[in-house]
Image 1 (cartoon, helix red, strand yellow):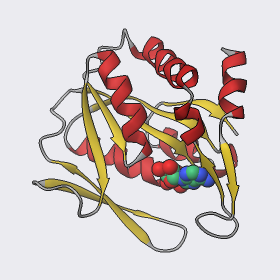
Image 2: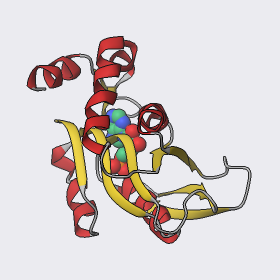
Image 3: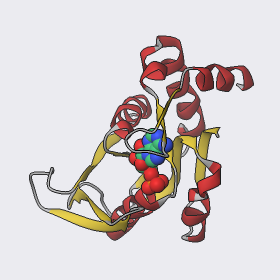
Length: 177
Ligand code: AMP
């Protein structure tokens, strides 16, 4: 596992000043591109959740879709997309959250989660935790039970974990930076 984490870290491409000045963007496309890494990541997450009776994996647009759908398939669970505002075609619920400058909104279909579904929420990366908290609120609104919020990468200095834990959610990250 330790060796694998090092291997994963080495496959993350760091792009300074993208999408804007001062941000170091962590690009996971080389990690997904590597067949051994991609398979190993899904296997590790599968081992973590296989006995938790998970019936829904909820992925946050867009990189959460990639990891989330592979994990859902392996867990024999359903997959639910949380999308940015205005993208989903049917009846939906919406949650607004703060960004560094301004606000944003995410949405989920109203029938995507049922009362007492056992849910894993997944995204590629947690920074401030604002996106994940809004996503978790959507799941909670529909009565889903969030077993854990799961991320490939946690940017520790931004304390997103704290935001989620203070709201009663469990957090797991594979790689800490
Ligand atoms: P936050 O709401 O601040 O936790 O931001 C998390 C969301 O923004 C996730 O969907 C990430 O994919 C994306 N994100 C934030 N910071 C970065 C970064 N440095 N590199 C790549 N993606 C990021």
